[in-house]
Length: 242
Image 1 (cartoon, rainbow, N blue to C red):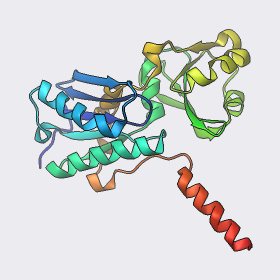
Image 2 (image 1 turned 180 degrees about the vertical axis):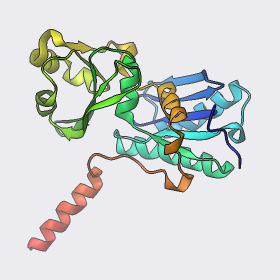
Image 3 (image 1 turned 90 degrees about the horizontal axis):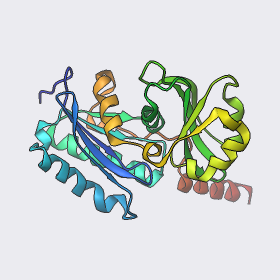
Image 4 (image 1 turned 135 degrees about the vertical axis):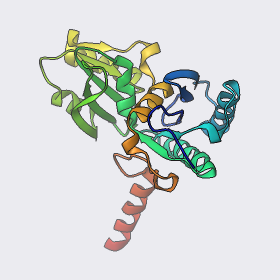
């Protein structure tokens, strides 16, 4: 089916973290956005939110040019929910999908910041998912590659001569440690700039049509293996030693 790569209508879905959301970009503007942080599971809420967003602006799935999903890193279960939702909707109407990177999307919260934006997501087990982006020209330009590592290792890799803005669900967990390590160089995002925004994911997807893929090719972005897989490998390793 035909779709517009020049001025696309984008439906973006995010269930990768604590805040679930969706947004619609149409004619170059965000026409609807929903963010949910009320404790219900994403599998309960996201499809109703998508249906409400489409209904609110008088669209159907057939009117969407690309279905974007925040594909990770993040909660393994959450990432799978969003990716599967986007794949299912896109497959049903023969439209492409776009995998949007969670850390890059978070950096959009500091569009135009003259330092580096440093998204940190709580990866549990004493680690954060992290990266750094130069935002001076608006869109994210990578300054440090993705990692899943202890916060102290990430902070040690950051440049010593830049202001650093920290965003993401790792902020409430690690803000004090960041301040103690970096002092006045650290800008801690306030609550209204801390969480990932589905509208930012829609904008990134619209500007990168070269990354669009067939629905069946959309896959999660993992920085480490899911816990179940890690535990399985441990068990297999134990058995091989017996």
